[in-house]
Length: 103
Image (cartoon, rainbow, N blue to C red; front, top):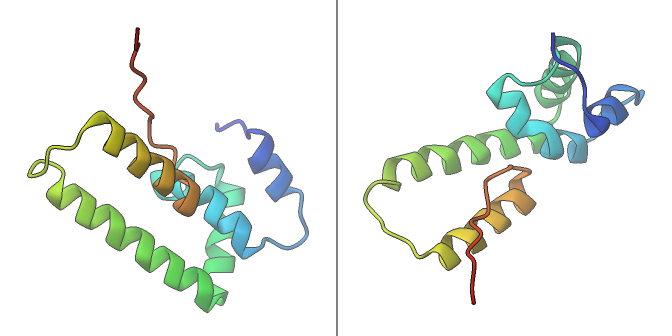
C-alpha cells in the first residue's frame, strides 16, 4: 500500500486534476509509485487531454533518448547537475544532484 506524500494528497483531494498536476506527478506515475486511485485519475486526465498526451509522448522520448546515449557520453559533474536540475524542473523528475565537497 502506497502512502501519499503531501503533493499527492493535495492533488488527490482536488475535484479536477490539472495539466500542472500531471506534470508534477508524471515521473511517479510512470514508475508505478502512485496509489492506484490517484494513478487512475491521472490516466483519465491524460486520456482526455491532448496537451498532456503531448507531454507524455515527449517525456517518453526524452527518457528513451537518454537511456540510449547514457553510456556513450561522459559529462562533467557540473554539466550533469545542470541537466538534472533542468529535467527535474521542466519534467517534474527527481534526478539526483551530485554534491562535491570543495575546499
